[in-house]
Image 1 (spheres, rainbow, N blue to C red):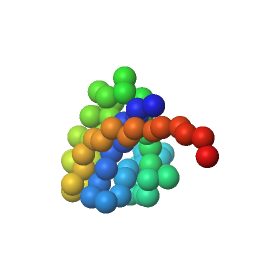
Image 2: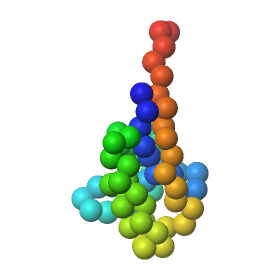
Image 3: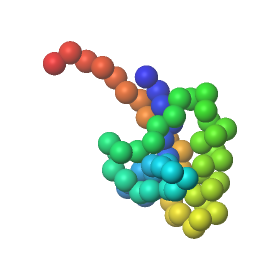
Image 4: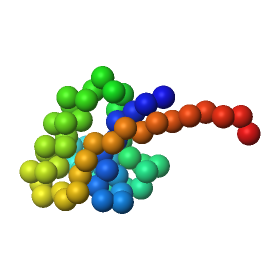
Length: 66
């Protein structure tokens, strides 16, 4: 499975109640690939609010038996 996520330095971004929060990976907002235009809008909003080192990343999840 492939998802989009926004990374900010060594942390990630969560969108909650119209606010941008810097969080660890387990709390980050993720989006399906077809929502790339919306994720790019979020990225622009972050840059306008002076968030540094923000970039869109593709998160690749795999499932394996233990």
